[in-house]
Image (tube, rainbow, N blue to C red; front, side):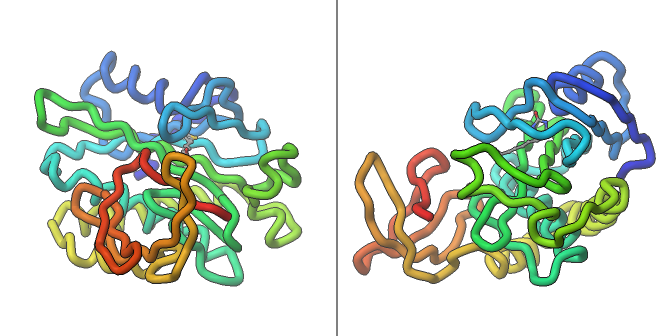
Amino acid sequence: VGQNLIKLKEVDSTNNYLKNLASNSEPLPEGTVIMADNQFAGRGQQESVWQTEPGKNISTSIYLKSSFLPISKQFYLNMAVSLAVSDALSFFLPSPVAVKWPNDIYYNRKKLGGILIENALTGSIIKSSVVGIGLNINQQAFGNDLSRKATSVYQILNKELDLNLILEKIFVYMEKYYLILKSERYAILHSDYLNRLLYFDIATSFIQNGQVFEGRIKGVEDSGHLIMEVDGNIRHFNFKEIEYIH
Ligand code: BTN
């Protein structure tokens, strides 16, 4: 990962750029990375926008030939990437980084970054994946509504870090967890993922359709759906169904 590294000053979205590159200039080497100083149309989960201060943060996308991955196991790629990114950042921070379901990167209950994985399919078979990673690194402050929810490595350490150093660590851990995925050691990914899941087995408030309820996260299905205990019953939640209350 990162042997073929393309650095751009500005792009709409590194995910878009890499997807276009993969469809126009096949075969693209696996592990090709796009890294941009600025994205003017960065995309987040569930059609949200991802904004970042130019030159300060990590906006990167990695190309993987994930055709070995059965579609029923595609959430394991999310787990592998969440583990890689959280391990890489934990290396630089005083305490371990957490993962918020499904794949947000959290520290001190604030969001440090997010992951957007887009799979190219042929029928119902995965052909390749573009793994987009956005991390708040040297940004010092966030806009009003974000400042309560977002944090950065700068806010934690009170100093700037070299983005390339962090990227290198991400590549190292991506290789580690991608190899675990490729060798189908799913149980390791599953238990490592649950081990660093924010609010795992802790009574937490969630909102569904405007209704607040308390639940305990008990696990995650292979599909990625969240398994929760609510009022003594086990319930399953889809990605868009619930929100956390902070
Ligand atoms: C989220 O938390 O909603 C996911 C954010 C993902 C942002 C990254 S930045 C690099 C890549 N390119 C994009 O357009 N999005 C991802």
